[in-house]
Amino acid sequence: MLNIALPKGRLGESVLEKFARAGYVFPKLESGDRRLVIPSVSQNASFFLVKPSDVPVYVEYGVADVGVAGRDVLMESGADVYELIDLEIGKCRIAVAGKKDFSDDTDRLLRVATKFPNVAKRYFAARNRDIEVIPLHGSIEIAPILGLTDVIVDIVETGKTLRENGLDVLFDIADVSARLIANKPASKFKSDEVSALVRALTEDMKNA
Ligand code: PRP
Image 1 (cartoon, rainbow, N blue to C red):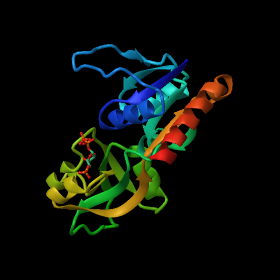
Image 2 (cartoon, helix red, strand yellow; image 1 turned 30 degrees about the vertical axis):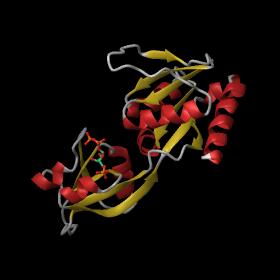
Image 3 (cartoon, rainbow, N blue to C red; image 1 turned 90 degrees about the vertical axis):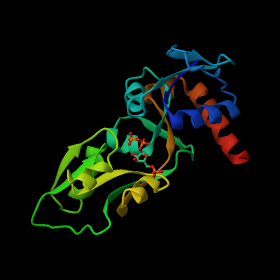
């Protein structure tokens, strides 16, 4: 029996569809359902839904044997887990964005709003640009519009949010997609179950 940590929300829905096609079928949750741990119909796994950024924590500490997390979340968390496969869903990119007429005044600290402080710090440190990170938890695009920061480091999927707020991508940082990750000891002790899941998901992707 595999314990699987999955991200709540949009990504979680496509992950559950992908797992179902691979033979890991979970019952559809009704909106009033408050169960936290859900066994699969086929009894080969159970899953729990958590905040996307918490998935690597559950996997690193072994509460979940495997999990699904975006590359953005993994880059930010630095969790000590194995990254097994690219599930090729939840595709987007992480980028620096700002007002279309942004020009960097290198005499000043660059103020950066983001949900990804570690990613932002690493990106600008590699370019020798000193920054001040302003951590936010949502609606990041509003920060440069209201003058809280010069730029943002955020997820861009369709680009609609940026466009509708007069912002633009200034620099790309990385392409993002969902990854299957595994707890290191579980990859040994449950290697048959983990390999079976990897095989089933890979097979499904080949046939897609
Ligand atoms: C994410 C991200 C952007 C938006 C990008 O926010 O932080 O705001 O989606 O998508 P787009 O390029 O297709 O417009 P999310 O919807 O997760 O909400 P949040 O603002 O609460 O983080």
